Length: 286
Image 1 (tube, rainbow, N blue to C red):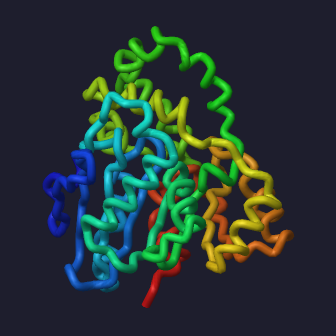
Image 2: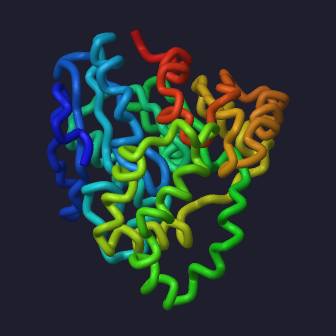
């Protein structure tokens, strides 16, 4: 699994409070300004594979983490671990463990909701914040299937349903141009599914995470009260988180402090599909 065999990227397991262990990948100089990269539902640090070298070359300390339940991080058999409050706390504890007093954050999809909640709750250690297709800014059609996932037999079957073929079909949904997907992409997303607890973690996230979109007026009020400027980057061909563009336009109409960019040819995982385009758009400290 990434970054095996890739020069310049170091990995380690970091233990959070309560014994939960998460995998962290790091590149760049230890004393350089840090940037934390947070992936979305079902992904891993591999989502950022094309970001390490460019950011390290620009003089940043690059950190990416497998969130709980993902990649090679622990996958506890406890549904409460996968709720928004628990995941925001896990990121706080990661900042503690890594002694990050000020860190810029780039977060995609589900992690966009996590990072935004931290920022709106007043987490002073988060510097600049860029959200890529944040889940809380759109409507997610696949969640209409969530009631089916509640049945116990579905949970028992899920590890057997995550075949390489099903992972490949799902991955095609997150790219604006599925022809860009390689066999390596599919293998990297399929690999974590070999742990049965991975499928159960995804199910608990589908059931228990905060996927609902707040009313634009409510979100705009929270953003204004936070006093921080937020950067939002959308994929113009996002087929998973729908209607984000109109929601962002509503936020701006309510005077929310947003900077918005759209990569028209990119999909939901535009940061992975079109890394150079998104890297050019992301504004970081320094």
